[in-house]
Image (tube, rainbow, N blue to C red):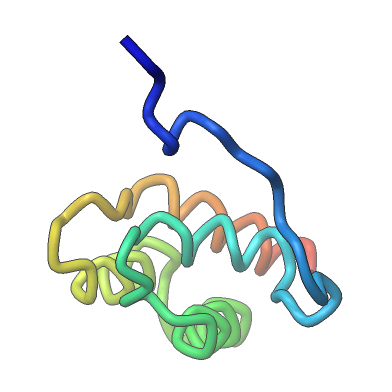
Length: 88
C-alpha cells in the first residue's frame, strides 16, 4: 500500500510575507474550502477588540460560512479572545 499524497507536506512556498498573521490563519484554515475569509476574520477580531461582540458570537458568525460544518467555533472563540487581549 502506498501512502496518499495528502500525507506528504512540502511546507509553504512563495511570498510568505504576504500571508496574514499565524493567529488569523489558525482561524481561516479551520474551513477547508476557504469560506472563512481573512477579511471577515479581521473584522470579527476588530469587533471583539471594540467590545461590539463577544468572542463566542464572533466565532458563531464565522462558523456559519463553513458549509461542511467542520469549523470549530469553540477553538475560534479562544483564538479570537487571545488575539483581542494581546492586540496582535
